Image 1 (cartoon, one colour):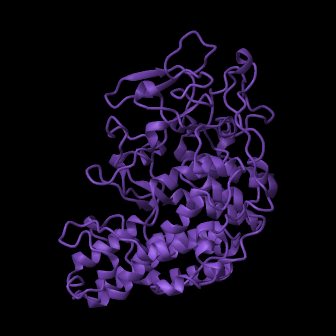
Image 2: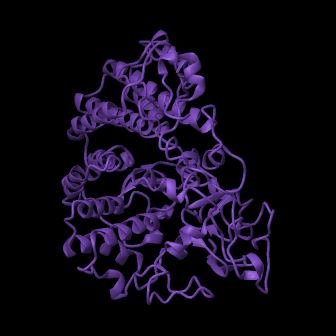
Image 3: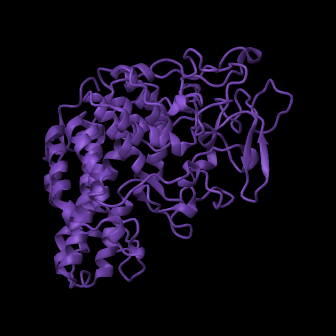
Length: 529
């Protein structure tokens, strides 16, 4: 935290104080216009989250296998210690953003702007602060919490606030600011992407979800579904939802904004096939993820009468499968409209740079590549200006369905308006996939909803938090993940590096060792670290 207090924050606007150090933010010369105040607020938006965390969170789960040594690979292998760079990076990045918010809140009253605009900007900043404190509490449990700009001396002695108190404060803060913000439809075109009433309440629902507070999840989601906080709906096309021409569509509730000329992400440079523009294959889908996609009749692949054929495994699968994962024989649509066939199976008759080969850095380590989030307008190095969605309406429907099922209140109407609607949008047409099935038990429905969350929201950074709150991480993150059925001349699945998850330790991350070295009051360390 000392590092954060001494850090220099660079503004995003082009003015003569772009590189102003933070100890000059309170200078009377600076806080003179809405534009300058907006520059600081925009810095806080920029610090809310990042594309690296967005995608790396998936590598911490059973959805992806990461080939190369990284902080996340060390964590998933069970070899991390409190000095791990991801633990310290998440901590410092969140507190850096919180400091920016506090600088803004301490000084915005100096700016000669209307009270309406000032209150809205304050509410935006308070949301960002709540978002960051929630990230911290969700990963680390008890954390240093404060609602003002702490001094350097205070950072040397501050202690940790229990997680439940931090979460209660986050929820109180969200409830207080919601009426200060416009709906999505009330914002001007040039203000697209700012925090809205809908974003506040959708995030509030997520805070309840992560604590399994089903009554509050259902209550908040129901209000969003009833358009109390803005007009949201499922976008008609699952594929189109993630294309640049459809940014800010009616399903998006909160996203991270990117602009091709100024701010981009390029994580997919190492995730797509080499023959269509990829560089290396650093992370790839697992067989466990592939196997969770149901058949077009709605049945899991191992269910009776599913129709699954192990020798032709990708036929008649959930329509979202081919929009998310690249398998052998995949027909890749190029930006110019042409089609490239992706050859991955080493036991096939045709090979290419995409074909699996043990030890190859270019080809996939699992037998699969990614398609979802591919931006056809990106540069040759896959630098993309595509916004990354943090919360969308489909998640509201899934949260609502899960809450109602856990409350033992699921019925045909709720199914039709949640899971059924999501599956229809995905492209399911078979009655078996769309029918509620009134004889389904609560336990069976729980499996359906959890599988639906995984396949609908894959590559959106949410799986890690789902398996942690379900307490299934200890099951799905232990042992060897698998790849496609390419081993032993196509008779068995590839076996990948083993993962380890200690249920008595890993549901919370440790406080970074560098922080404890500075401030012993951050002890005791989380259990077993």
